[in-house]
Amino acid sequence: MGAKDWPKNLRFLTSAGGVLYRQGPQGPQVALILVQSKSGPVWTLPKGLVDEGESLPETALREAQEETGLKARLVEKIGEISYWYYMKEDNAKCKKTVHYYLMQHVGGSTREHDQEVQEARWFPLEEAIQVVGYKGDREILRKVQGMLHGQGA
Image (tube, rainbow, N blue to C red; front, side, top):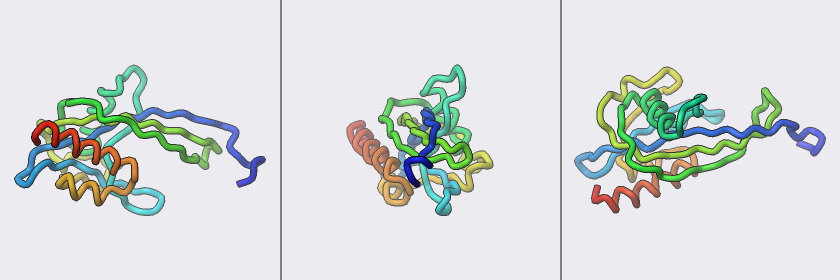
């Protein structure tokens, strides 16, 4: 793309999501979702755009429940990841910042996920780090590994 073709529009989007965890027989497990990407199905963490009037923690809990079918309680903020991408339909360059929270599972079922998600499933934390399709997700899960180790989970 030449300089004259560069998008004239810049967009800045804010999302929130999280890592839902529970204690499994062999250690912590985390919930991942399978979604369709441009390159095919990819395992990722639940997240979504912040609705008007909604706080980041409220968005994280809502999106996690909608996309995984699971209910959770907020434990603490993990961190944030920012990345750029191009929106062809709007000829816009977008910078998205996703705020991630650690959430403890309190109920629900992965069978209750919404229709934009192909599947929601529990993975051992170590395996989840290997199967997620995005570098940012791996970074967040590695942080969670240290956080849960510090909590004795």
